[in-house]
Length: 246
Figure 1 (tube, rainbow, N blue to C red):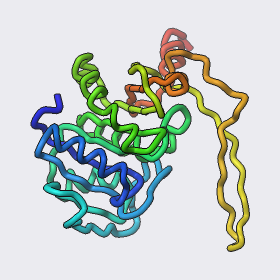
Figure 2: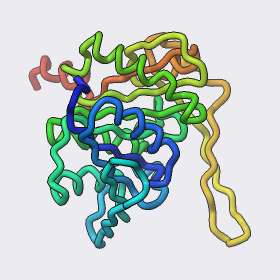
Figure 3: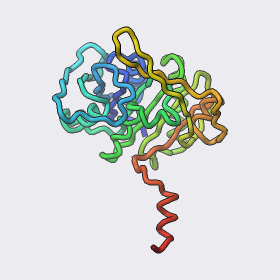
Figure 4: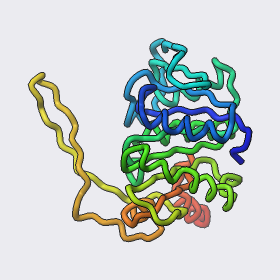
């Protein structure tokens, strides 16, 4: 895995994101077959949104990455994946999304376009890997080689559809986790332009105590790798009702 393969790289922070550049430089060590397709502007928290009722501008970026072909689009991160495959005819083995400026754990996963663009690969039977950092991208990505070695050694990539990787400020371990609980309080603040802007803060009195969760791992200096799927069925409830004859 990750040896002379074809990698599609995208993100939700935009084509000019430092995190995107750091990730591309790391991936260039692994393969020469890289295509970057990223939003032309910030697209955080757009989740799995796709563009249906308006056109999308595609622009080739000549000087963003050395020796790597790159495009920016006016669409969403999920649009980036679909346009790379259907319009640019690039057939990746892996989709990397990131490096996101901030964590994507617990509840955040529902809103994250970083995670969503990695999950889009499920529709094409392509492994998706989303990477998010809780610190300066250059600092957090010093663990990248260790993460790749861990994925290779455990061979989790052979069974996974999507790996959601979160890197804390300081990491001592790597752990396979499940999605935890990370609630936050939402408020809306009106500014001088008369518009209301959302403001969210984590609930300080809510601490994840499940040692196998992504939130717990991050809070305990551990890199979290969470296998995800796009199947939102409540399997426990489904299986329970399958046993009931009504």
